Length: 332
Ligand code: BYC
Image (cartoon, rainbow, N blue to C red; front, side):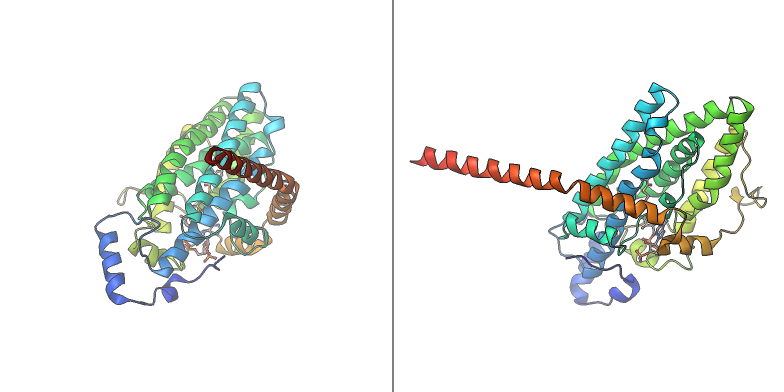
């Protein structure tokens, strides 16, 4: 069932031009495409690739933060972090369910992740070294996620768009809990302020990479925009994020690790320095600081959970057989 990520420029070669024109007209008219509607194979595959990658990111994204649940500095912080990490698990579930409406099986998608055939967000391959990293993940990683995902609520594919509405509401709470941790640290002792600054220094550039390669390098953006899966390009979203985030960092009294960061009065945007794309390529190719650790943890969780899946299937089978037996008795 699993379909390899494919270059949508090649895959968009027309099969049935009249049908494709009608499909594109529906997209242009902002009509949602639903699972039983006809769609070009390349549209379906692009969605499977993106939604699966998104679902995997939510699940792998539980690991760096899960690392701090037992070490949260207070009961209140622990309860909030626990709830946030559980939310991420729920997001993964909605997204796998949305992908399944496109005719793929969740088991196959999970297999593809564990075999390294499908990606998850580069950002989750960095370590969480201090409590301030939890603040920065909420503030910046969830902040970047919201910037990227609000437009996905208007995605042309109905099940993905609807899943994103609930996800975005929860992400907004996540972003606030992270920023509130940063406010507390930046009003705290000199050690706490230094910890907040150090976390920003380590996470800032990897967060900018979350939006994907620059527009001229992006393989999929053109078709995804035409199909209204994406509403903004990677560079547009990155710029919106920088513009929204820099004043928040300044309010905290923090310094961004970018000597080229400056406000351009003429454009009304914050200009920023060059992203190290060689680091991005290394991380998505599997050679980031924590790639091996993350996949090892997911494989172990998958294997350890095998008995739960078997028990759930056996229970469902028992209930089905019991219901069938009851129906038979009632019929006699
Ligand atoms: N990391 O042509 P492009 C979260 C890949 S969850 C890894 O621009 P596209 C959260 C891309 O897949 C965050 N790979 O692609 C969870 C493609 O490779 P393939 C996840 C990346 O799809 C828990 C190649 O590079 N969010 O926020 O048009 C706790 C060329 O890229 C990355 C989503 O998944 C990356 N950063 O645009 C807290 C949102 N960037 O597939 C927070 C939905 C690019 O050809 N996804 N690649 O092998 C999207 O919006 C788009 O897929 C992207 C990339 C903007 C990510």
